[in-house]
Length: 142
Image (tube, rainbow, N blue to C red; front, side, top):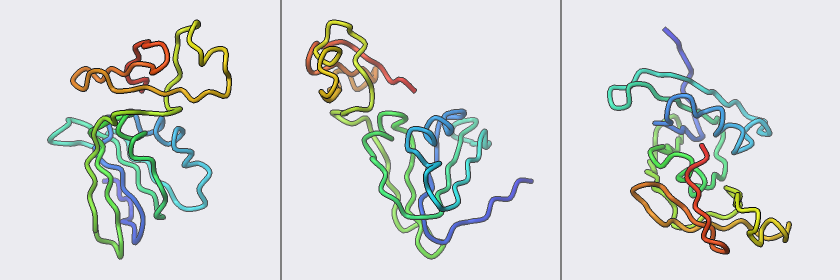
């Protein structure tokens, strides 16, 4: 039996699609933190079959829109004194900025290197986003 200590104060990212935790770890730059970060992969789950969990032993700011874009099924648990004090359920954000890059070579973002890559949610059911400049379609890259 694997034992991972509980945390006194911090964040637990739960219900991550199995195999996606390392991408989230890299995308959120969790390697730059000075605190403990535990990644638990392929945990058995009645609801999901298998899931990943990330435990961060510190309270940090996490962009919930980015997490929602990566996987809207993630649950963000805020831990204080070893107890969950807040549980945030995510959803696909209506707009994302500099999370994905437009793949259209004729898009203004290809020419203007300093321009933000902005996408709007075009189809919530399919998870489709479109570039606000050229209307190029993109779907979750994770």
